[in-house]
Length: 603
Image 1 (cartoon, rainbow, N blue to C red):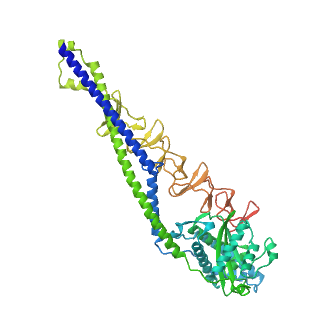
Image 2 (image 1 turned 90 degrees about the horizontal axis):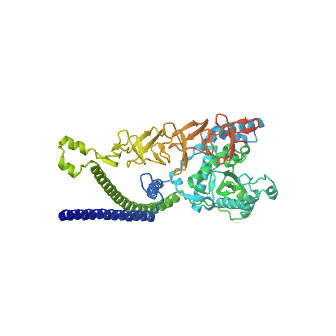
Image 3 (image 1 turned 90 degrees about the vertical axis):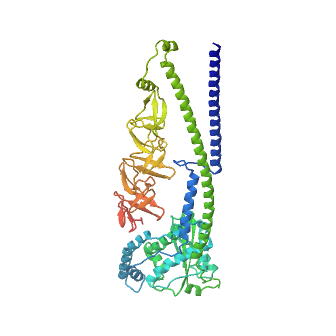
């Protein structure tokens, strides 16, 4: 008895010691996981991490990678010397008709015929507004239009000069010369227009034009014209634009200038702007004209002032302060300065990216260590659970000691094997490299277990699509078995509940756009689609187009194609009517009383 009692005490002590060691190990492991998780969170916080991608990467890291890639492309673009690729072409028929229209030695009938030809040829000129070519280096730097650097102003002047002289060469009239005082004239006038709180729809600010002209002792149209609603003046062609925002690139500013000069040619009051900008001067071209340009933001859009001062007007000046000196072209120097700036920025961003990449590697290392500890934790729990289950099974099947002594069963290999299979499996088990879930020894199949899906053979789905008949939906399971949510998987979108979007709209906050997922789940890509009786257009990548033209059709803010309605296009500064088929009306009477011209604009 004493021996048996001692043996029992030893066994109990041993079990208690083993049990305590397991508790201590678990506690230490959990403390280590907590410590590592704290280190990981602190590392993310130090690196300004505010969000994560579906694969666990930091948004800030991806943004830094994208920024470096973008800067590399910008630097490459800036290394290419600037070559102007934009052209404005007038047909020989247009050039002749414009000259005939302002040749008062011709009969009224001949001049009327010339005007009809001008209108016909202008319809062709309108099409050139889509021909603007953006130079890559012009798309990089963004400027405040109200505070344009002097060098940028000079570059814009040279661009306008080039476009105007292209027209003049085709018209056979003398080219204009860029002059510093003409640039200053335009700049001073822009300041006066802004100070007077005028808008782009207002008539020429004759008072302001004459005030600046007097500063140079130049002839003016007089105070009587300044007081008239539509008084005349000698120096300005002006244009308004609604497409230029306060923060714009050189490409956007040049596009506005290009459009304005084109508009002078095809869309003026009896082609008066075309007469002036082409240098015809009512059939008596000046020997020399000095040009300057300025632009600034007004309360309702952007105003552009094109100033020309002729040699004849200069000869009548009462002062000697008008400089005809041409400033040096800054186009190339601006490119080189921007290149230098972007190269420095690239080096700085590369350095930031390297630090982020180093930190992220540390973050990944900690994450792997946490995963390993968690795996050990799960294995430990599974081992303990199995031991408990084995004891439970043993308690219910083991015969009493006395029975064993009295009637010891004979066993063979077959009966022994059969007896061991009665041990019940429960929970997650990894078998032959795949995960399964057991309930009372039975594998679960064709069902969900939390965020995981068990297929027909019981295997946990990994890196694959599954269709759930109960929910009538497709799901995508990642490599760790968890279903994807609020994320794209190729051309498909998984919603917050994990279901694949199908025949429905989704708005993606990351891309700031609406997308439509067709039947089958793929997003609509680079095509028109009629949805619930309404036409929509989707760009390459699936982005829904809104507030924009697509060919002859207009997509409203909702993305719906406009039909049987008027829309106002702030870019072109006019009202347009979209007919029942969605195409815009042109050269016709709309609703029995409104006339739209060859460009579709209401006049």
